[in-house]
Structures are given as C-alpha cells and as structure tokens.
Image (cartoon, rainbow, N blue to C red):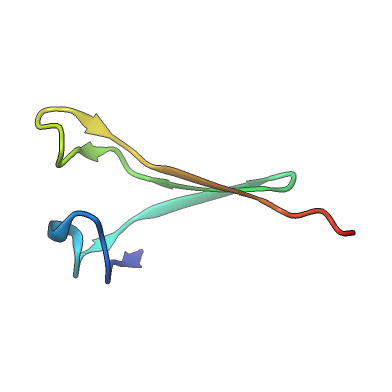
Length: 57
C-alpha cells in the first residue's frame, strides 16, 4: 500500500492506494488498480509508471 501525501487529485490525499509492480529485464513497472477517473466521470482508468535501469559507462 502507498500512503498518498501529495496528489494532483485532492480526494486521494490521505488515502492508501494499492500498487503492483513487476521487473522484467531492466524495466521496473508500477501499476495502479483500475478505478473511476476523477476528470472523466463514468470512465475507468489506470496508471502505469516505468523505469529503465541506466546502463553502466
């Protein structure tokens, strides 16, 4: 669980948010669960954040 301290959507501040993660090769992916999108009423959405490991010099 992630304790939200700062968010673009004020309704999420102070809530706990579940995240899943996976690592494949040099890529870390963090994904939110599907939820109603606060900017688009009636539409679901989810977030995916990906990082790629920097190669050594």
